[in-house]
Image 1 (cartoon, rainbow, N blue to C red):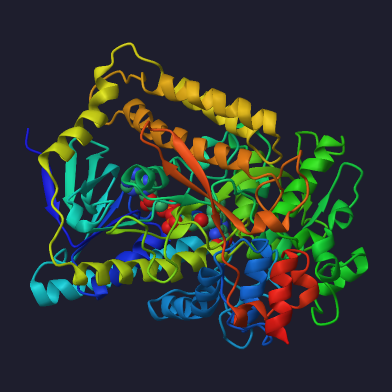
Image 2 (cartoon, rainbow, N blue to C red):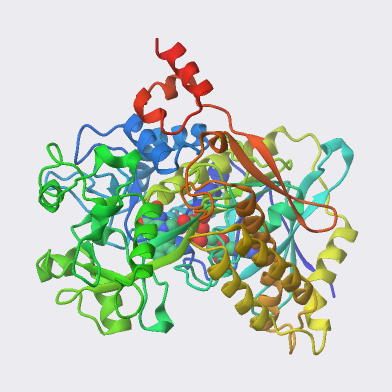
Length: 636
Ligand code: FAD
């Protein structure tokens, strides 16, 4: 049977914030652009984002600016961030938010009519532009509206609304296609992408010299997660298999507040806005325990008494922030420690309370989704009683290694933006910095892909052999009758990652996890799917499993190598942060035998003008003596 084929200049895989912003940019640069997504159009992960997009607009506190945002981001990432990405992000985020407004986004307002900004963990000033607790929905709605506006323009000019930008929804990409002609360099070049329509199971080939990965994260490798079914690490695995590198894969963010009860909803997110707007964490003894967990590096920035913490909500100039608003890794570890010490809530979490802090009508106005979520899913009225919450796997800081300015990966023609890209957030992401990251680097990826296409002298070609290989790989689970059950393999992977490579890690447990993953890889290679190609979730899972296993191997191997604790990587056997390890990135690539190889790569020290934005005392907590000597020389 002939395979459906399409030709484009740029194929964007993923229709979340990063993918849509990339596609808009590529189309605005005059490139024929396809957006391919495995979910329904509009149902990307971005739509679930609640709290807001971080941008130093200074609307609520005029002291805010890009330098303060840059410093907060680097601190949050414990100085392992790609500082050029953090710089571009802090500088460009306000323009990206204003641009959204120009395209029709309706943000909440300050009393004087500016875009309102709310507090979030790790941000020195109120910085998150938001729409209640449904910011992601507005972001996606606005970007989709922009796509439609461009299509209307194309209808007027070319008589075809899909002449330059077209959406292929419910279509899963399983393989990136390459042209290995050495003229393109040792890694060849991207020639397109191969996938299947989820409904019919029919295959489709996209021929395009540039592919932007915007596939989001990997949470479905963990048992307790805030992530939805799409997050199976597809983009990470596609990039690895195409010859690109992944960095920072050991750093996984466990959001401190997921629902813990009832079991069917365990892991679903409870937005950080609850704490940003005044909610507090208490243990079973009723104590606000976060005051006991302020780490040395943050001592001077957080309140040490409840009185000061409470005053901060109305007077931020003269008081320090409540410790409930420490970066997420700190709060998640503290909750974990309280539960372990036997001071948890009845269902294994702690209490998060707004009911004694805000009036019922304020809670319903500021946190409408949370009110409904708890009422409908847990029969808890958060205006009257506290929520029970605990850590949940939320976000991966690691991802495709990209050039900061163009979002280009090391394989010519491959670009990545959003959660699938690595570097920007270092070892820990600040809340709100993802939505702004999607906009800033989505735009840059679209522009980078367009510039790459313009500079190409010859277009890479999709060979018949490559397509046959991709087709055979995709069909394999359907041809194995009586093979392993993919649901069982998946459940065991989730248990393994949750229990052995979770929030607190140890060498022997990670080693055990890697042994299990090796066995699961063998079992996954034997997975079979009953039935045919027409909407067959067992088949889809069997294909997604390969990606989850590969990505989990990256996480495990990098976690075993990094012998320190930093951000989203806590080693019980190496509890301290090490200045020597700050100088190292761990880079994953695919070895010839299909296993993951991990190598150390030096992390360059920040540019001098960025370095001197920090004071020496703070840097001395992170940098080596040699680096500090350099600071002394440049700071004078
Ligand atoms: P996504 O929005 O997830 O989009 C991924 C796209 O890729 C989807 O369209 C998917 O279908 C597609 N895809 C995946 N694999 C394939 C494939 N193989 N083939 C084809 N398509 C594929 N961040 C903030 O900054 N502020 C917040 O307030 C906030 N709140 C959050 C609340 C929740 C509940 C969650 C889970 C996350 C939150 N985050 C927040 C994080 C943020 O939402 C995500 O990091 C971000 O939306 C990721 O965007 P993305 O564009 O990279 O990916």
